[in-house]
Image (cartoon, rainbow, N blue to C red):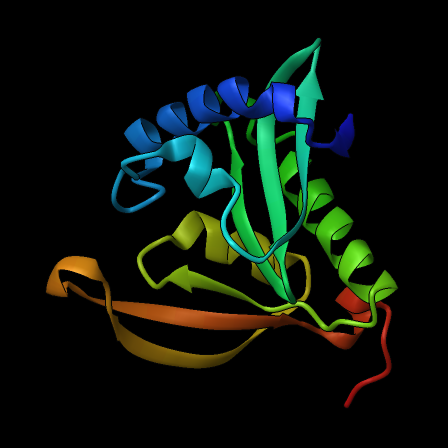
Length: 152
């Protein structure tokens, strides 16, 4: 089940994030305040995926950017990442926004998901992150089929 995130979900979301970080190195750097990281400035809305009452996925919309998308390693393969992404796409479209997302070039599992769902890589750039680390990042937008939109 995908539903809007509630404030009372934040502790479970932090536990989920810790599990994902250990397994998949996401987020790349563990935040000083993970609950605050899950609720960044500019947050439009956030959702969780639940299985048997346990939070196993999370996604957010910040302006027009899909953000904080993750699924517990043990819950992967059940389509939750895709359902979360579609939920964010629908919410963005309802606000008249065309969503975008950025992903580290080394995160091949996430890239595979986005491309299977019809998202199109529009740019690749090197970004300097906090601490001076340079990271290659791909920028994606939904394709016409993904977003239910006519090609532009």
